[in-house]
Image (cartoon, rainbow, N blue to C red; front, side, top):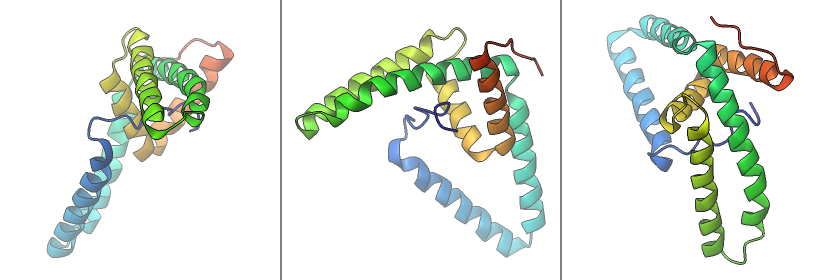
Length: 150
């Protein structure tokens, strides 16, 4: 979801996260093939996605959306500066300033932490129902409507 998920990739694991997910998927596939539990694995995945969608109430997701909008604004302000940097070192310094400002923007949203912001962003990339709820809430927020608690 463009704009709303802006900055969700700033996890502390950095580039290691895709390898962890790939390893977990490979391990799960090996277990499924060895034990013939593929149908149970599919049910477990569906159940996990349903739990992720229900784990966050609308008020929390509204705070996520508000933080994401702020992060998006910071990102928009910094992209031209990074692109206009004289060299890679300057670009990195500007990007680090942007990251710090994005973290501050998230933390300024009452009740939202960087960890929760990243957690919700990552969950939304894997869970279509959660992503749809976030999109719905983002539309309401941008139209100025009040949240509808679930």
